[in-house]
Image (cartoon, rainbow, N blue to C red):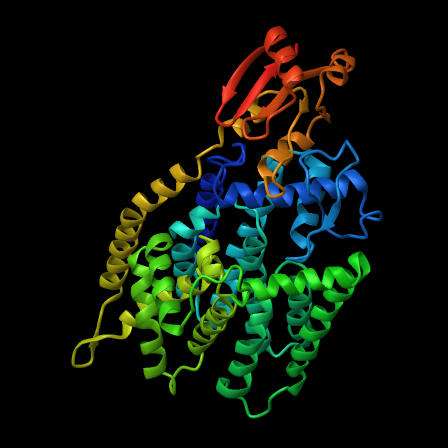
Amino acid sequence: MIKTPIYEILLTSIIIAYVILSTLDITAPWNSTHSGFIGAQYSNLAINYLKFGYFETKLGQLSNTASNLQTGNEKYEYYVNRPIGTAMLISFSFLVFGIHEWSARVVAVLFNILAIIFLFYFVKTYWDKEVAILSCFFTVFSPMFFYIRNFISPETITIFFTTFILYAYAKWLVTNKKRYFYLIFFAFITSTFFNWENYFLVPPILIHYFIFVKKREKDKKLFYLIPTAIFCFLFYLGHIWLLMGMRGLENLFKVFIFRLNLDESWYISEITPLSLVKVLITNLQKFYTNLYSYAFLLFPIITLVKLKSNEKNILPLLIFLSFSLYLFIFSNLFWIHDFLVLFFAPIFGIFIALILSEIKYITVRKNCTISKINFYGFLFIISFLFIILSYPVYKSIYISNSEIWPIIKFLSKNDGNIIVSFDEHPQNFQLKFYLSKRVVLDIRDKDKLIKNLDKGFKYFLVKDDNPIDEELKNYLENNFKSKKIHGYVIYELK
């Protein structure tokens, strides 16, 4: 008899559903929320790789402080807050597909698909297929995963590496094969080129293995994860020093001080463990629905009660605590980012799956547990209710993610070289992205404009709060049609 691979079919269905959701607005202009801001930011860093070359930039993330690079008057800086991996991946995609919003977002979609696959095989290896498919379902269909469906950022890539490292760890525990031991180190080292969060996977893995895993002989070589993490961080510091010298290291130190909530100029309020829990629950309710809040409170209790009989369930709990420590240490994340609980997504999916799997073993009466039919019927009802409760959140996230800054909307739909006459805010990444795709000239006087009118420039862009020369303004108004777009005036030169 041929066994139907039902769980693999369900996994494929979940991935197909995710891909459909991820393409809803994959070609949309960068919006005015974090997904647009960060997507455009890393796209600009990627464009600079292509514009100046990987060798010339020394693989550093070159960031300019003005909206156009053509004038040659800008002071160039390297972005050191995050490692280089995300921007480099986007640059490879731009190299293959061209510079578009979708070719940046497709990187996030690809890595999210890989994250779903590795989540399934990690949970299947360490628990079973049933828990694995439930983990994938409650991860992928959470409003948070909908929020990051094509959100390109280091945090998105982090989810993939979290599941990749955990898969390698679980396979090594179960099979004791050396190749999976080495895969743990390979996955971890690679992850450090993308973000900081996976450094916080090292403590829970070591604690789980040396304290909770029931094996007579422990492989002490796993402790090499500690010097490996230190080496990776020192390697990153060495790269910054190569790019900028001590000034680069000082810039990174300032970022850490800011994130640690120790910068007096940015200090908001003291972050305490209680406020951490409150903020976490608030964000769980906003981006994951109340079901995840209940799992967040219930799972630790169930795990501790059954700790002696099942040491496996302590692993996701340890990871959750370590990631919470990351948020607590870098406390300013609480009021800057609306996706601060993003990398918890697979962990909460596992939480819910393990809680639901325990229901099978509830004794209804003496020597009688819940039947399979009743259990699967219960799962169907919970899953259906979960989708129904999540729908309003999906809708609100989709609408908020569709908010397009009017000038960005105009530039994304109208091609043509452009003249600007303003100093742009250094963090106006969406505007930079659309200006970087065309020839841009910075002109501040009438005579220079007249000399360049026959050079193919289509628009002259002026910012309301950045007044231009009166003679230039009169010349533009007397000779060209104009339209006002929320803080900007656009003159049609052709």
